[in-house]
Picture 1 (cartoon, rainbow, N blue to C red):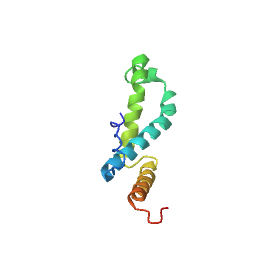
Picture 2: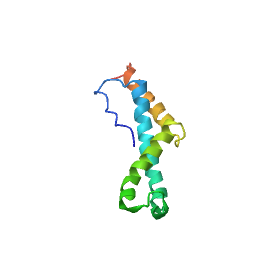
Picture 3: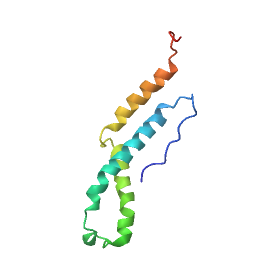
Picture 4: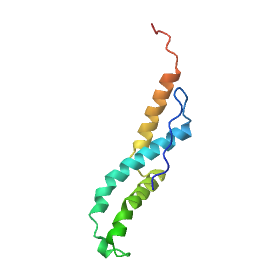
Length: 103
């Protein structure tokens, strides 16, 4: 399952690097989960160890979410976390840097 959502910091407050990493990883896990859903949708659950059925189909999205979150935590995601972190840090630094030439 995708880890709990990270609330945004108060307006004007800076997010810590750890909170930004958690938010970036959470977003990447959501994206990866959505990309993996179609791959698991076509599985024949009647041949599975648990016999398939509606219960297995009901819980499959949570299993896919857990696979995605584990892959991202292990560093085997699709590479969004690092890109998002760079952009969040860039934007945070831009808002904290005073602009001297403001009219």
